[in-house]
Image 1 (cartoon, rainbow, N blue to C red):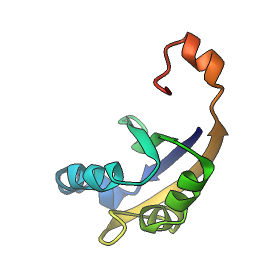
Image 2 (image 1 turned 60 degrees about the horizontal axis):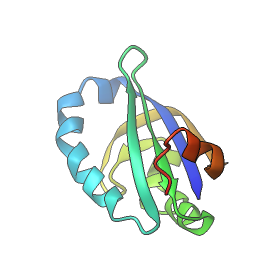
Image 3 (image 1 turned 30 degrees about the vertical axis):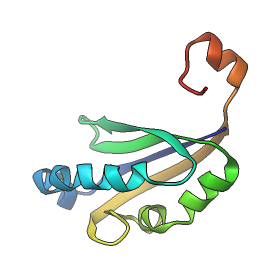
Image 4 (image 1 turned 90 degrees about the horizontal axis):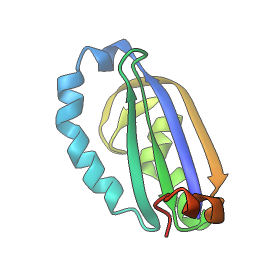
Length: 114
């Protein structure tokens, strides 16, 4: 299994329109839930720093790479926040990191990877 960690800073444009963003968030989550090979995603937000992101668990590297090269992450890598089709505004400091899961130790601490 593979973990993807994505984080970014919201621009002032997005911060000023959080109601609009939140209204579209559940639709985006529905799209993400249909991504082949994605087991789960945990959404992250740090209100003090206007930073957001997600932790994703993929079944394999091929699924993770397909997502990284798909429309949603293409938008993020270009500094745009949207659903892969509709842009909502700019994001900054996009960080994308990949990890392998250490399954034996994760099982000991009840990590949801089985």
